[in-house]
Image (cartoon, rainbow, N blue to C red; front, side):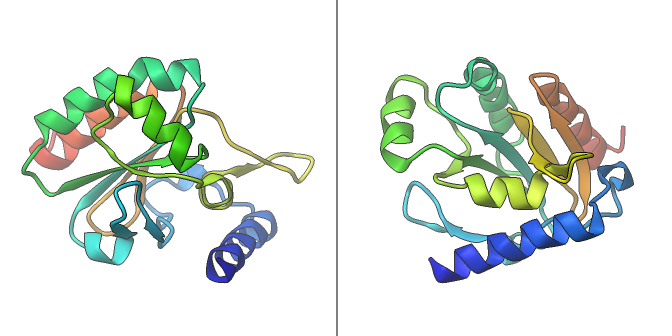
Length: 171
């Protein structure tokens, strides 16, 4: 827990000092993450080298987040067996997610209790110095570990679809 807190604090400080500019898409490295997923497995981005990583940032009770899950599941099915990893980072608790996914299955590997990580790694610095983050948020990281897409809202589903098509088909 101390490691996670230190990591989040470092990321938040780094974001506020350097004013991360996501307009530099394709030039900004994705954060290194090592956390425990809902299924008890370790999610370690070091294991994803050479693969495309798609993050979905969401929480239980977010209407657009819930609306997009079937569409995101379709994308997972479409790219099954390819070098792509799908990870859902959620600010919701393990218990809330387990209850939610019984009725709303989600094919992403889910990491609960990720609020600090999401804000510190993917939040944007507002003009007043605060950090902000829109939900749902979609991030696609290329094989070299750089962010290619960062899109909030339900329109992010199409951005993910287009980026995966580009990565796999060159279109």
